[in-house]
Length: 252
Image (tube, rainbow, N blue to C red; front, side, top):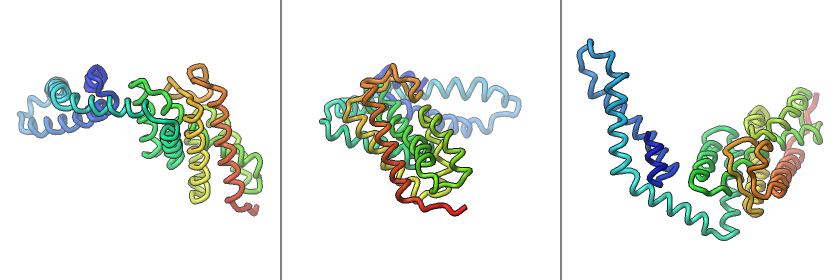
């Protein structure tokens, strides 16, 4: 309900995020308030007291406390993004794309993804395009590197690397995690460079994405799809070349 109120008031994804925290704190507070109720009333706490009072309090707080200032911040942020010049938008693309490869599914990756999906709700589609481009690069780069720089990987890695073509094209960044875990100081920076490049090029080409996920399967929803694929390919090739340069030959 907090998310619905945030959406209807213009508070957007920021309001929805705050609503989640507010709801959690309110329920915890209600548990403490009703901790001393008779044992015979235990059964009504989770089915009546917590949801009824929780929803009521969340609604009141969202409408009168959270939504007014957050809606203003959200609108200001959207207008600022729309009013940015090309160089500023490229910087945002580089930042969002690079974040997707920092921990490949971890908190930094998810922070960028949440911003991208949140902007979809607000009508800003360029950031989501940069986010997905950045997230597709690491597994594709790993697949390319295991294909063209075989001496840098073990036989097992070469075999599993092929699967990353599919995972990368499907926007499943986590396919690169085993390779990053095995050699983080070389793999992660290489992937960040390519992902940041892809994100920046996506913004430079003014690509847009109206879907929150899907990889190449949502190409029909992408603005400037051919240039978008060029951005992803360029980033993946750059990362693969970096991997080929910085990784040492494997002795088997």
